[in-house]
Length: 325
Length: 181
Image (cartoon, rainbow over all chains, first blue to last red; front, side):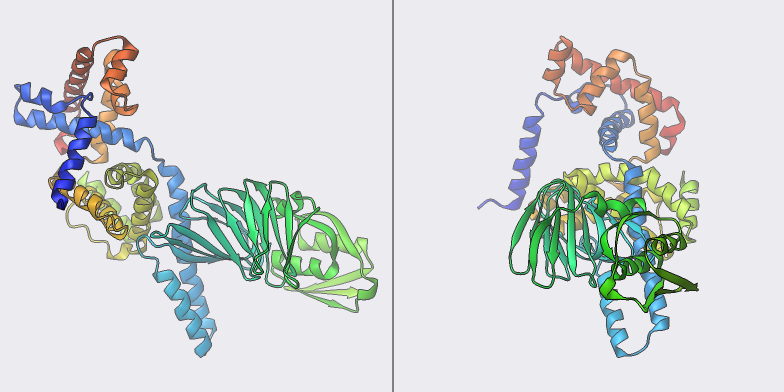
């Protein structure tokens, strides 16, 4: 058996063989009659040129965005944890706290694990360490983990997000609380999976994704398709809904497609961080809303609803009361 | 350069994010190019250097730089890269790279100022000499490939490269940069 040192020698000899037709500085330095200091500088210049050509492959500007967002994420989580500490008490809360700090501090050198979330009324853009980008809509949470040994990227997700996943040979798995899994190779798609919603919606614009339900039903999606997963019966199917409706939130537009008043209020609560109570509403005669609402103020939207149906509303701070007549 | 380095370090310790951004812009590509020599993989080199910067900022209050900033950054990046190979369980590569870098004293790591001055000097080279140098070092073309494309002998090309290095040395000696090397 060869020992390691011979292996090293061999591999070094191999690389010099490959460079036989390359310029060998040492040949010239041997013949050079210069002082050793001068020759040393020549060598340094030669290595410096190699270094310079390699620096051209990197862009500090693009990388800064990633570093900046990872730093902000860490600080944001720290602040949120501190607030959490002040406002909660009891054993359950401290267990949660320990769990979340474990997630944060287990971010050792090459094992990326972190959680990011948005509150009601918040939107945010995340850059994942692998180069993927995720835009988070309000009230969403994303836990990312990367295992460098298995080279496995995994995301646990709830809420709504637009994913622009970097191309990689290794698939990327997104798990939702509903049990539906999304298997991704570099693509762009929207995923809507709020815990309180009855369905999980996936809309694909580019590339391919495969959906796998908890009953192991599989669906391979193509660009332009909308897939709906019904949590009640765990059925996965394609919908004929327009894909652009799913991306409305990215341009601050709300698309309503035969949406019930209840669903509209849930949406508004998320987007504007308000509490909406509906009183005296006749659900049997319920109206469904269709159309596009461009995000202006919440009162503009409520005024629009008043025009379309027989309701009135009142606002008190963050509380909104809608009255059916 | 030592002075500006320590001013930057002090500002970062106090939580100056703009100073941190300056440090990042100045060193990022250089550290990546350096780490690339260890990882042989472009994107891993980026991951390692980004991780290093996140760590510098997060632990900034404990930042103690005993030598100079340049050495501190390159040596930290190198250690991060070796750690990565260790975690990857790539023993053979680790040994090879440790061996390769063991002869390098920290004084020999060229600061970004040197590389910047070198780039300016390359720009000033006569066009034919510059062309040969760029083909060999930036497009990583072999000497025989260059000789085919330029219709000259390999020997002429070797001489052109030797001339280029000597001219670069003259140019660098004229500029003030060599004082810090």
